[in-house]
Length: 246
Image 1: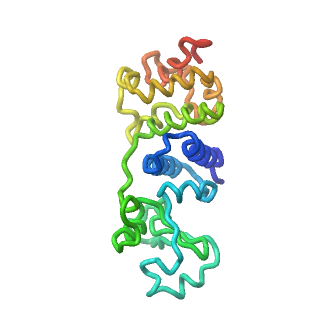
Image 2 (image 1 turned 60 degrees about the vertical axis):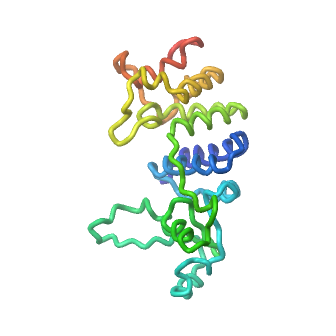
Image 3 (image 1 turned 135 degrees about the vertical axis):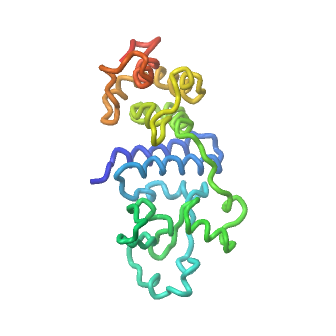
């Protein structure tokens, strides 16, 4: 079953960033890439058509007639026979390097009669190489820390008084928002000094969403954590100066 809460979180985040962000489409493109990378860590369905107008406008997704695919001349019968949404990557489940289906959009996708590809994917790179995408459209994605994107989403969501969106993002904690495969590599002092964390905490305090975040299904309990634990600090710090810690 798809994780609809994550799907809604990402779609709503794209929407508020588009409506209340910095107005820089190149920056929005990079932020969207980070959001969909986050979504790929969960069991989610394909939901990009919810916000496709934004994805197309900012240059995260590109749309072409199907006959512009680099392989169309050799595989015209295959493409012309497609009648429904289709991811174009083929898999060999018996191959020794088969690692699942996470890369299913790498070779583009079709919603007949149109072909789509996302920035940074294999088909996007092929389109760049053959000159179908040029100028800013051929620029690689720029890496952006997830915490920076979450901070920007929270600032934008505050303008819409969307406390649920702020709370849900905050509920993922340090391990998810500042971490990696080995967990969060920073200590409390380092995290506390980060401008994005300070600004996110300020939004949480102003909107009084700490307790709401604590009720999220993604919130990690801290009742039995050591007082010096980073996640404990994450949950207690925004409460200082308001109604008190969680």
